Length: 219
Length: 408
Image 1 (spheres, each protein chain N blue to C red):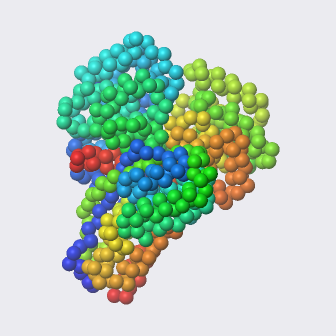
Image 2 (tube, rainbow over the protein chains, first blue to last red; image 1 turned 90 degrees about the horizontal axis):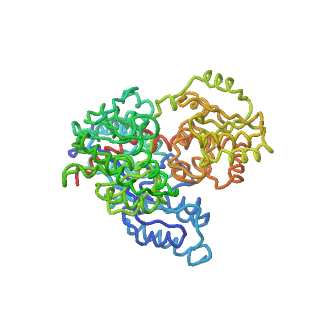
Image 3 (cartoon, chains in turn green, blue; image 1 turned 60 degrees about the horizontal axis):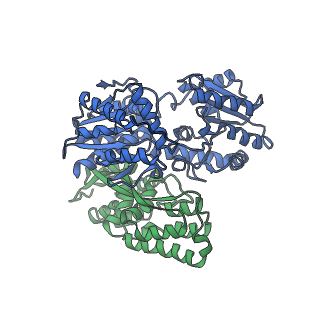
């Protein structure tokens, strides 16, 4: 069995939601907010919302899309916002730019809708991350499997989803370690392709454990 | 000084069956750097009200994590609580008729409590406006003080808020139940949801036979759809509006309506509302108006579990934890989009939001016509509560906040 020189250190992350000073009642105000809110706010309403609402596997992918659908009642724009896939982004700047483009194009094409008031206001918030070591590490695939199986949702989310942004790569902590430290490139790739939008955190983890078990049987 | 000793302890490990062992391990990991550190929670009542109910659960769990936590209640006489009651209403946007001595009385009781409370913990959490001025006891640069506001400050009376803001701005942070309730402040503001305890009598699993007994006791037919609103008899909960919505639904479905709340006997305004409700019900045998005893958690639990649809048609709301209670029981919910309700009801995912009597009736009819969608909302709602509105999550937020304050 391969033994990694660099262990995988399991951590957990807890997020506090910091309430910002911006809010939006119309699509035009949403666009202004998107242009000026902090990077942490864009992260909160796109990446973080996937953890908060991971149990929703259809029709919900970020807070901007949900507000546009449920409060502004613009299904067409909501769909365009919902299909933005955070896995395609390695920087908040790029994600913000696309969000602004989509909303800006819509407001330009349908100015009559851009100033209509939504049913409820949208409040821009930020995620503040607090990470703590779980005191558990892995050097082998067996230890790694054990650690993944026991992670909380927040810990799994931290390593599997929010790490994409931290690493500035289109990968995640798990895949990076499996490939870089254990040389399991195919497994790393398969793990990276688990769909975080159509899976819950639990079902994503179950798929990952099945992939690991298949790899262990090969050994 | 009155230190509150909490009863009804439930071991932390018992929650692993509900939230998973990983969540409990995570709580232990977050608490580890805080082990032995002192925390002081201060509010104005040890019994009654949502804050006391939450602290009763939260404090023993924090103790199990080896945190040096204590809960103390400030002391006051009738004149003080009269003032804070008028402040409370004014902060909710209701008219306020200031008497010259109001602010003086408020400050004088806070000063007396400063002398009797310890206020020496490393983390001091002050709940709500009543003890807000205790911050005067804070020694500059020492310890961390945070203010947890459980009320809606979206439209406060100017004079009262201006008075309180001078104290609030001296805390390290403030926490609100909804972004809508927050104010423009110079200090960081965080979102802290109220929480339910999944193992409490109000939310634990109950024997189906007990549910049947409760239905039988109140002459509710288990074979026909049951619409339920659990709330005190208060105009802001719009019980008469619920009856109007029920009447629209009744044209299409042979359903029953249960309006259950605490007894209105010691609440003059509640008694008046109850009279209005009885008048609106007009002796319809399918409308059950239940005045439950002051503390009847198991009956509430059973009624929620027996419901086909739970309604919360409030006109204004703080957070509306009855919504989380219903969602936890996997019930489809139709609720007004006010206060903290939209945080709990993600429209078309964990339930349906409504903005009028007619809208409420329409959403109820939709769910009665589509039981498979109603069931899906109930499942999603349960997960939403598990992820965000359980007491274990609330404890986690406090731990994260203390760690964050400590690092800065």
